[in-house]
Amino acid sequence: MEFADRLLTCSDCGGEFIFTAGEQLFFHDKQFKNDPKRCKPCKSKRAGAKAGAGPAAAGISRTETRTHCSECGVETTVPFKPTQGRPVLCRQCFQSKRPVAEPAAQELPVAAEAAMTSQA
Image (cartoon, rainbow, N blue to C red; front, side):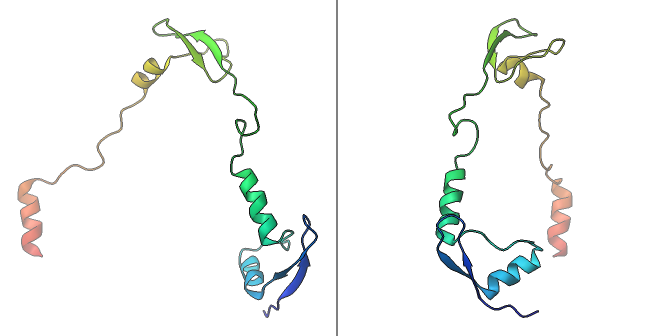
């Protein structure tokens, strides 16, 4: 399929930008259905605005709830509203309940290692 450079209008600034043949081929390969709506400067401005996205960036504070640990009874704060019937743990009790990660790989015995190096 042949692609030719096309002139498009940016939906943000109203300026014209070129949708190159290479970009069209990329869009075709990725099976994108729509042409780009924004020029590169507007797209990068928009992406920069979203870089700090999330509740904290929007000025919305996270819910912090004071409660008591179900294990040790110490007062703690949690970043969610606890539901009835479910235990709430402080950081220390939570860390102690988590399964410990196993070592990635065990070393080969010295005899097996020597056999492997002598074959090479």
